[in-house]
Image (cartoon, rainbow over all chains, first blue to last red; front, top):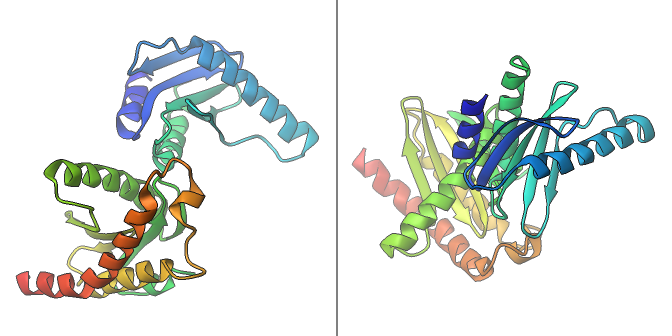
Length: 116
Length: 149
């Protein structure tokens, strides 16, 4: 799993970290090109993904979210669910290649689902 | 759609119009989304090379692999490219790319880069220059490439 995360950070322009987390917010595996601790990032985004999931499945009848992208002033994060209980997190810089993040994140999530 | 003329050319496997974030505005072909993401990445790299070499603004890109040939033109902050089967004559595709790129700068074309994203700093002026040169360079360079072959 670590090699997959490293490959993602290497292949996606502007990506500086990748992680696999449970929807409970606990990190399963992570890789960062910086020394930033990803625990808080994973915990906060697990909450966001849970909220989005609840809103879309229960309130909006839109089904399970397939991806979630949040772009802030200094941080962008792309999330892709892995099965029912986990998700892939990609931390991106402001001028990252979101197209690569979506494509390669989706491929990685499909591969990782078999390992979790 | 803007890419219809490209799609129908012989040998074209995929084509895409993509912004600098790698998301396709329009694409055709099974690998259109991958082509879009990688063209945006290649453009960022080639612009760094151009800047470091003092070569000026990059306007077009072409490369050949074992299986495909890729040609692309840069217009404003957008990239327009096509992947063709190896061995296909790329001249008509390059001419079509140049024509489409020129059309993107006309009313009803793409929004200005400044309007699409505040991060596209200073690309508005660069965009108009690129559009002009992409449209003008196309047939000239196509002929030169044909002669080399």
